[in-house]
Amino acid sequence: GQSLEQPSEVTAVEGAIVQINCTYQTSGFYGLSWYQQHDGGAPTFLSYNALDGLEETGRFSSFLSRSDSYGYLLLQELQMKDSASYFCAVSNQGGKLIFGQGTELSVKP
Amino acid sequence: GAVVSQHPSRVICKSGTSVKIECRSLDFQATTMFWYRQFPKQSLMLMATSNEGSKATYEQGVEKDKFLINHASLTLSTLTVTSAHPEDSSFYICSATPLVIEAGSSYEQYFGPGTRLTVT
Image (cartoon, rainbow over all chains, first blue to last red; front, side, top):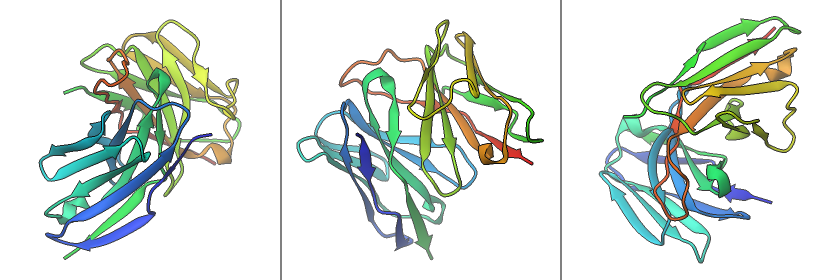
């Protein structure tokens, strides 16, 4: 079976740093992706980790530890527009993406 | 950047009718397209994987005779919901990738804007 666990919701204030964790159990693993989705919109790609370590893209960073089947998304200098749902997703054979249940981030002023 | 479109964006149909949703890659050739369904406040559930010129591969629990997928060209895949019922009401999203999938390579799917289907 395959499963991904991430917190259902997180609340933070503008300017803060927030970390969204993701643990996974999958039968095949090529990499861990993160997607952002605003209400009623399509998911947009944020980052991808195939190897252990930290990937940084602007205010967003993503980390992966393959030995721990664990990753996280780090959002810095939070802005109101960052309020959205964030999904981790595992890539496996054939390029399929298996999504976690999503974390709803609420950024307060 | 890579752009994927879907049509229609919203559709309301009566129970028992069929609805076709189109997914197009506008500026690249999509070797593989994926169809997802998302219920409110829930995750994206992969329904099927569509490769140009071949039959779609359906995920466990997805009825292939109910959700007909055709990937006739490298830029177009269609999903037809046949004999729709109210429980089929959902947000249907397609994605496409032009990349050859290799272990360890950077990988990204480009998502369409989604189609909200309401069956009355």
